[in-house]
Amino acid sequence: MAVTEAALPVVETFHSLQGEGLHWGRSAFFIRLAGCRVGCSWCDTKQSWPEAAHPLLPPATLALEAQQAAVAGAGFVVITGGEPLHHDLSELTEALRQHTLLPLHLETSGVDRLSGSFDWITLSPKRHRPPEEGLLRHCNELKIIVHELADLVFAEAMAGEARLLREGTGSEAPVLLLQPGWQSTGGQALALDYVRSHPGWRLSMQLHKELGVR
Image (cartoon, rainbow, N blue to C red; front, side, top):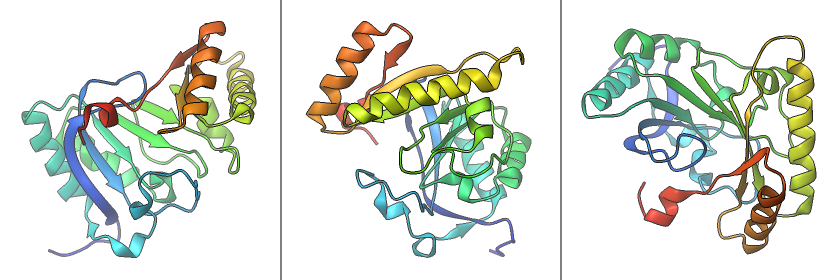
């Protein structure tokens, strides 16, 4: 198979259930791209960090896989990573739209400028690498991972900045989510207590891990 300039490093593709965020529990087709320079110590997909360790696949190949997943019942496509916006996603989303009518979702830390066309953007910014302004302006859900008290302060700062950027634009505010770090008992207690007393926030859990599904 010839590899084009638009080919992307792919860790894996799979059809499963979305386990996090507002769309948890829904059937989805995942495209996990390789490459991440954000460097979160708690990351559970560190195998995705090195680009060179994973094969390059053309957007058309990935779009055909998404088309097959749609026939099998997938309700949307999730492009995740790694950090997917390290790559230009324009040709990938164009190919996906040509081959399937499925909505396209993006999961990103927001450290790079937005590329590609998406129906839903999940922004999960990190304290040590603040997001690009454009992602705060356009994200549909803002998901903050909680390990310690400083993460709650950061969460409110990000929510406030997103609100300011949307003032006067008519754009809806993002859904606000707090997600405890995996197996972080302190983070879980903080997130539960905060959501209980701050109704503007919702709790997100990694339910796919709890259920033992991919």
